[in-house]
Length: 128
Image (tube, rainbow, N blue to C red; front, side, top):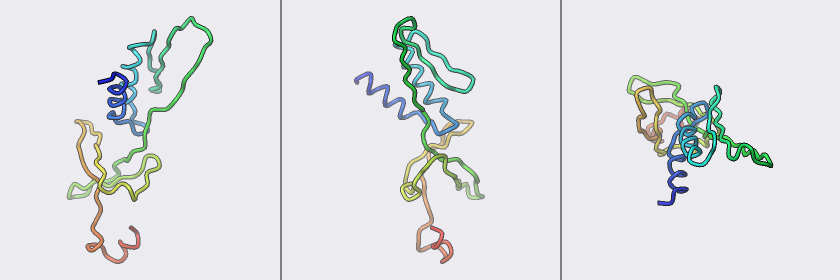
């Protein structure tokens, strides 16, 4: 497989919602180490790579590595998770989406669901 495509797949597969970008940033730094003279990370988690440090002109390429995500706000007695947005999700496209819940003891796969319309009370239907 083309090395660029392999890197892109690893980067896109690494979770990185805002505030939790560590894994995606690690993938980027590992790739940068293959071509950069110096790769480092600061205390805020920003990653830097220097190519040809004594060269001229000096050029900086900057970007961000975070992605929109969801944050668990509540777990009910049946184990269902309730979430809030990190970023600008359109709630209409979430239902049926596969997700990974990033946990202390590893990732847990899941899927976004919602109560079927025929099981909702009138008040619930107005809110959905």
